[in-house]
Image 1 (cartoon, rainbow, N blue to C red):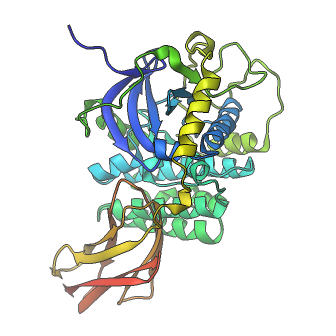
Image 2: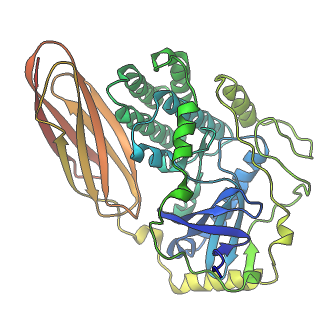
Image 3: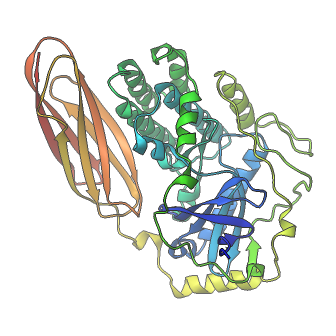
Length: 450
């Protein structure tokens, strides 16, 4: 007889799991049989004073936004405590991410543009609602089977650090995302790569609204001349996380008695009837549309390919969770946090240990696109790296940022350099790591002969 799959609060956990700075993400199956996600927070982080409350407040804000019609976020089903463990459970799958798809190869330019448009629109609506994401990068952009791009982990990185990121950080993260997508495109889509580079620069100078408008207004630069989810949807369906081998042999250790599991979300006045997530779907309570919701709805209408996958609600939590031990569990968690007291700021700051830049070949012929790869090795601390690429044959400076996580020490920073015309020159690409300091520099050269 097969052993039953491990689970938490009615969610069955699969063997596909990966680490982030927040903790351990696991692909899961919801109680009603849908693909979902489960995040087991790192106990060293969530046990710090105030962190759990900030996480809960962040999730409750997200739920209000989603219930109001903002469909660009991964909806959170619940945050639960099981002994000293704290879990976040999502109502939708959290894989594959844009990072997964990029790791598998170039992304269809029309699909990449769709992801940029949709994530920009979500960020614009978030900012209108007075909140920010705080950690925009390929691993927090989830691609659904329909090709929709949804943001996950909204506000969680800020919650664990006790900070609020400004909108400019989101714009910088989106710009870095656009540059990464530009670099991933093959030589067959130079106009699309140029467009992505340009909207990345626009986001940093004029903001996300202008960048998004530029992308939509100049979609003729894309192969096929239009933004489309189709290629992204095919790639997402081809990267079904459940079909992939487990990176870790053992699932997390779970409490033996699920009766000890309690919900941490208590929303006063919550409607008891069924609720559906998605634009155009209301709740049973009459309410006035917010500015953020109007922005979301009007923005989604700009692109004919944009639509929201439906997400069905689950049964009332009251039938799944026992709350009799809530006070005792909370006291135990806080007592453990006090015993293991240390400030998050005592963790080591991000530091760059080395960089290495190489060209894929030493010599290239007429009309070539050259891949230059910079490899950055860090001390394994989470944070942000600011960098720039410079080319000796022109004055263009390609700037970007990279979000690092606590589970990774090596990162690739690719640069695609297209050269045309008759010439015989030595080309040199220089990578400069600006922050964290001190500034580090490395370069690679190749010969262009035509």
